[in-house]
Length: 295
Image (cartoon, rainbow, N blue to C red; front, side, top):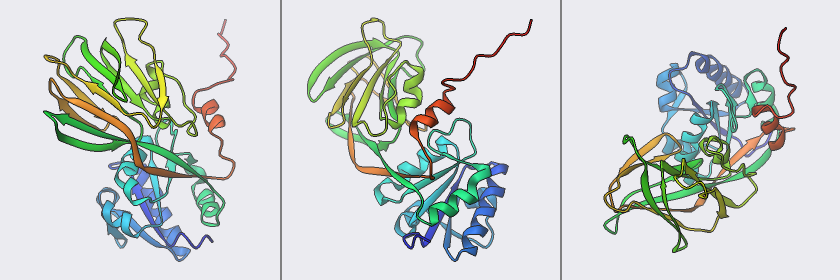
């Protein structure tokens, strides 16, 4: 067994009966191997983890050597943001739909976790975005995102105007429904549906993807990951800022959204045989045979 993994945290999707059974089975399995198990407090309330040590995200960050996330990509995104500064490696068991980040199948869970505990895994670093919203020169919000930051028109039924700058240089005045700033991890999420590029996780880049731009010449562009992006809402335009599709913040006219690479990274552990390209083929149904229409 890999001696680096002595305390393992379990994090699950809330209010999911399927998660409860799998998580409790996994907790018993890990206890049987002599490992200390922490169950995230919200997860514990949801699954009824009686008899198990319950811990907050901060406690998990301080004590855990590994966090196993049971759910879909949304559950993984939330855990990654909460644990990023603690540098706790994450592994995902897919109980959602697509599962771009949660790559262990439920039926393979115990076998894959056994291999991981024996040191049979591949570690991969994923970049995070650090986001600061400036209002009248003062910080109104600071957070991180693993997938993307989206600035859009909010509830209004028309386009907004955004001033987009990179490293202080004007890129364009964008009239659109909004713009997505995506990491390589997030390039297969919302940005993909907006015709953005897929970035391999090893690519040190950040994608700017306009949402329904008024000018068809406004195309997606991939920037260096050392770039600092500023998105300004010129008066009278107001909007809404979304972080990983889970957190949101209402932006006022004149606000500046400053986005750059975070000093923290997320470490994902993959089971033996993992391949990013194979994952894309499977999830996006590349090279699949077309269905024959019945006569």
